[in-house]
Image 1 (cartoon, rainbow, N blue to C red):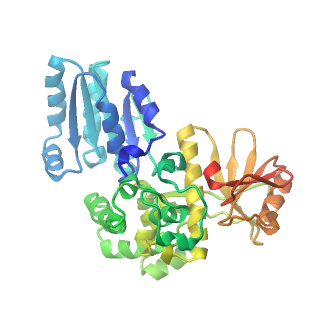
Image 2: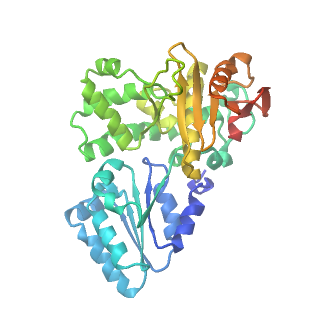
Image 3: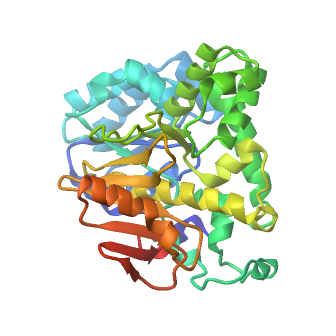
Length: 411
């Protein structure tokens, strides 16, 4: 499998920006394919292309020492014609943002600028002047279902079939174990696990130490493992701080670090009319199930994961899929979860401009009446027109008035 086999949802949008007067800032976690996507675009731009990959030690040291090198190189290249500037991992030298601002203002229509970043912390602090007006912001997630279709084994098979997988094809359970980072899925099967383990350790070394976000790497490593285990839940931070042996304030700060470096997302609790006592703590989700498993020290072989754990991973996988789709559709939709203190729970509430759509997620091929019990409650309380049950179902099924069971492949 090659990275090119994955048709990125954002590719057409990036190609449309070739002729626009705006720059592009593409944010996303490490190894989601930002560099590959931008490279596919800049190769088709006019004039000279100047590339600066700040993740390369030598380039980073040179540019960090004298950031104006890039500005001067662009000015010199402009004497020969239009220039495309590509700065990879721009957050490593945030001073460059001011220079990019200057180039866009001074050489309108002559300079195209593409930036990538894997941390929002420094960009928020020092790059606010680069945001709307001159640069269009995009977010690249790990692969979504439409992007992994070339390597999906469509047929639902029993777990024993994992012992002899079809070459070049992956089953759902393997996506749940390995995640959907393009670099992982395009690698040889015998090195995928090692690459994921390296990602987890590399995150500690490169992202945390390089940005000086914390000096206590040992404490952060303990926190990261426990936080990964809690992915998909609304964790009790006080209990987590005791298990980590860290102050509560430090644990809260570490969660903020995970969010700032784009490792986690949050889904807030849905707070309705007040007729029921509801839980309001948000849920945290690691951006990729494979990275979550690696950080938690869990098995990365689907055959070693219990069915119960697969159910939790499947729920996280589907929640992440909805996050990706909403982001790529550029809809002002919001995701929530709903849970009462009495135990009623709905995994996802999709709030569109017009309605609330409750969604229950089950790692099962056969819908059961108990699967939709809480869907019915929510739909009755909030007068919902539609509800969905997402699982491993071979075809769409009407399971109750207004409630449809659909396959994860049909989202």
